[in-house]
Length: 437
Image 1 (cartoon, rainbow, N blue to C red):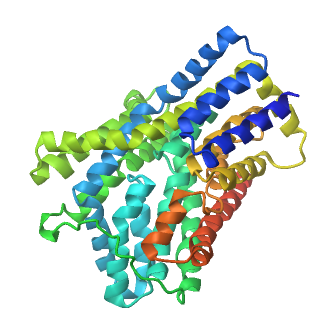
Image 2: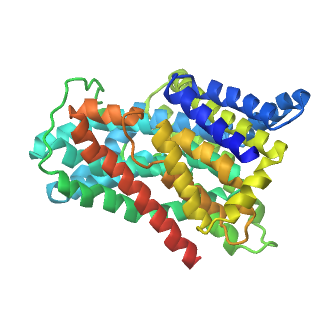
């Protein structure tokens, strides 16, 4: 009976978001209370479960996600993202343009939220396509595939960071594994897949309004890349050093301090405030205004994450998580593959990759009790599943369709298939890595 209640609750969540267009946070809140009542939690304790789930989830995420949003906004507004893109174009040249676009998307995608990065690079895609006489979709897919992979696989992006918290994984290790899997994934879904789209005709729909900054006002290429990539550099380096330095090492406390994701993000933001802000002649007030806008952009996303935490806590407090775990453990399928499949189904139904990933996390969390399940790989398997087959219920689908002025059939042929390749290649990478480590 408890399993049936969970299925009904998930179906209600999908219905509220997809059919009735209820705000995702409110939908999670409604479903959490609904599930708590049906699962027999004492009425007086449901509120406590909801508040605990909200607090536990956001307590470990707010600093990382908020600072990440600020860094991404500053990277875009200062022109650093534009400098990275144009600089890499010059370095690679026309002959290797596809690879230049892929690497550009990967570097820009580290600090930028997906929608921000998408809108930011659209003018670049069309300018490169026009300059070299290339089809826009063929030109843009490698870059957008990289943005999608960083969004779904790599901390400190919100969804994978939230999954790290849900599964009690190590953020630095997850980041390293994510990069290992991301590289072949973006090659396959980017340049290789894009080569099949050369004959797909599209033109700008005339809605591109992003203003490009004069090149003489841009920060240098080196400092732009360093500022954008600093969180990844800090988290990766400290994770590696932490495994090399003995417990008695004198520098270990400093490494542990810097390895904390929140500290790494704060340090990175402090550096970027100077290198991309004050050093470029931007006043502190103007930089803080940029940060204020970034917080507005990410507030709704944080609430969605908190909502997922509420539902997970209700499942835990009701005891149904143990029942789900026993049921899933009895299935003759690898836990990582099962988690990916569940995330795929929810993604196709709901549309939002973030909602799909976090909802799936609450369902498959009991699988982590199995000794053969690596929590870091579980983060990546759910992240890969959350990117499966974006279609008409996903905002990204319509962004791509309208900016490239495509038909729905053309959008499915290019965008939806690209996202599916990312998802399938991602889970293949996860499964291969699970047999190696």
